[in-house]
Length: 423
Ligand SMILES: *Cc1c(COP(=O)(O)O)cnc(C)c1O
Image 1 (cartoon, protein in one colour):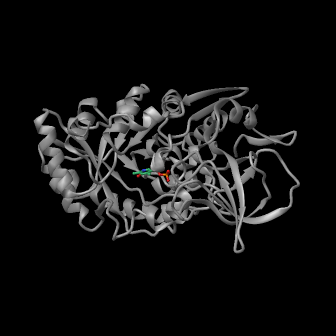
Image 2 (cartoon, protein in one colour; image 1 turned 30 degrees about the horizontal axis):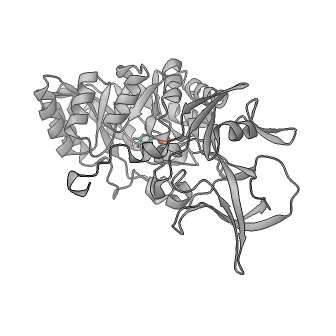
Image 3 (tube, protein in one colour; image 1 turned 135 degrees about the vertical axis):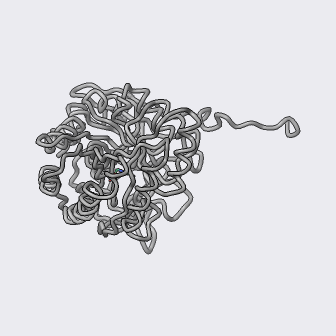
């Protein structure tokens, strides 16, 4: 469900014609729909209404301040993976008591920053991290609330780059070993064991891996809760099930939040615990598009190419994961269908948005919308080939706001210095 629809043959974001945004802001540009965000957030949150829960929006999916501010106002917490993301979450008035910190390589400065901010918990991913966390917490005179990220060894049946809960992944602590790690944690003076966590991957299109992971964590939790850990004085109050619910990019049929929630709630029965969820993609993915302009249609003997002004520097998902992004004309057309690669200006053959895609033959200057670009779009953008990053635009009804302006050439060289010897 989203609010990018044709009205009188022209695609609009809510009530704003994309053509108008292209004219006034230029291309490439990310365009987000606030009504879509609101709906997605509320549908997700209310699906869990019957259990005590905290939704922690996963900041890495889309970290624009305006969007984060919206989530904070809705009462959302934040799942963060770096000091920079703590900074963003605090900047928008996010409640530190709803911030959870994941990631395998947290640095000392990042940990200190989060400790001083008083976040809800650190999702610890290894024993060395646990030891370091204890030391750093002691250094700043605090106790670090933690949950262990358990690796349940469940195959999420998604792209290998976004599978995170299998035995060989760099993430989390092996489920077999984790009782020992928990005991160790409970014995550390500056560690406060408060939860258990798992996140098995992203863009999952069925509930069964979630259910399997929950069952494994649950079995483990029951053992820990009634067993050894309680004796050590640790009390598990939070069960964090991570994010990962997929969206429809092409022909996937991911479960709706309601179905996902029902399966999880069923698995929680009899457990007195606060559930934490870390959705990213499912909230923002379909709430954004990348608006691009056709530069050239190039035909070689072997192939046709639609060359556009956005590239892998703006939206890397197709290049990185070979993922499918739907591409639609902004102005509906009856032009003949051709089969072409839709490619960007970057000097890499991996720079494409679509391969062998059937598309209405566009002309130079035509606008296209790369759909479902709201998650892992701008946040993964780079300046490769010295392209300024595109602006981000937030549409609200019949108004729009530039919530991040287009970078300038000066932005590109910001911080670079030519040493005196070379002047
Ligand atoms: C990336 C990530 C998420 C969000 O994943 P989505 O697939 O976008 O929902 C949640 N938790 C952790 C720990 C992550 O790394």
